[in-house]
Length: 262
Image (cartoon, rainbow, N blue to C red; front, side, top):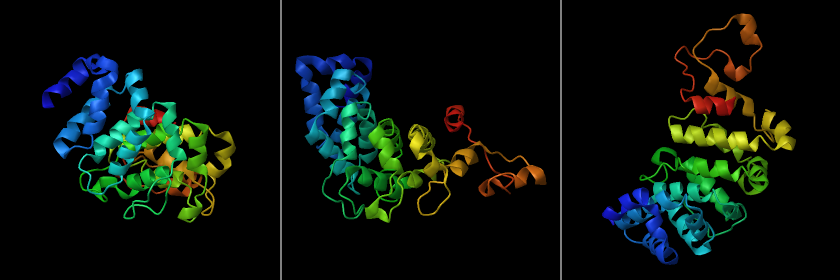
């Protein structure tokens, strides 16, 4: 298996031979013991940019459930690789069915039957290995960004969730705009940008109401702020969250993320 990983980058088309026989085998090997499963996942990640392979993976309900079952398992050693593959699969429109997909509740992780809620719980509760010591789930932010390209995805992120004390899902992500992980910051910024295309939701996105607002502005502006000092008159005109920042405040260093926030 180790030797085959290189071919998935150098000659990915060989995995399409025999009506995707190799792809079908790799899907099964994802369930094998950890080292073999990791190699299988790595190869699927590498070849999933091919549209034929992507379709085979993204439209397979059993394979999707296999990924979700393992991603939400606190002891899964390859959860990060599975999150990466799921993010790749989100390039297919068919994956938006995750938004309405219900499945068994992973009791130590979530109280919701909704697959999207469970992935959000993985991302929030699992940051920096707090849920699964083998995973940080950062790549799920890329998955969320692609989900937010669909009207149904944008609606999910701005709709209060009754099962979760009417919390608006996007408010769970905004706190990560200044996280130490570049991947997490980039994916969250892209998710926010895509959600913002839902014009009717702008009042809710900008509202600072604790009951039904997202209070988005501070979280998009803070990454753009540096250690500069401002006069009293300038400071008074700023949002409260942007005033009196510490002298060691760092501005987002990644130009693409800066542009996304702008």
